[in-house]
Image (tube, rainbow, N blue to C red; front, side, top):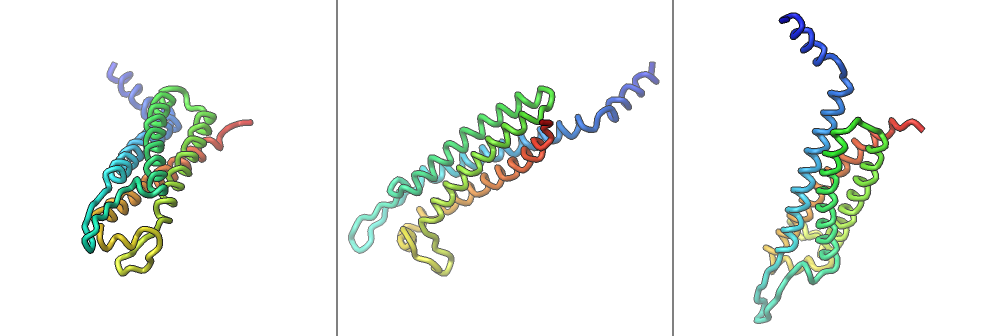
Length: 186
């Protein structure tokens, strides 16, 4: 009886290295999707709460994300990216319990590619508004106001950074899905 149990454990450990790889891949995808949800949610909440009111030369000045169409697009892109991340997490969990099918990875590849492109477009729009570095290298767009509303600008910059991290996570997911979907037999 002891011999049978030891033999059974040995068979479980060596029976299918492909199965271990698929479980590792699924775990990696789920982890990356959870991180993408966290980063897009954080970026969304930061941009939606970014506002600051100051008085400059006796004039009340108010800075909000909603005053810029690029920031509105950025906020909406992150909201959609977060919703797509939740959807893809559910799909990855459901598909992970079935037999691995390269066609499913192809659909996840398309989903991940679209989400990555959306996040990249949102980041590019928000970044293109203008960026002032530490030494004031560029003063395009709205960024000259950062001398007066630094809290607003810091929140927006942090939000953009978080969104770029989420986009990089989706780049990794896209590469993983593309690698798995190339196993499709036509």
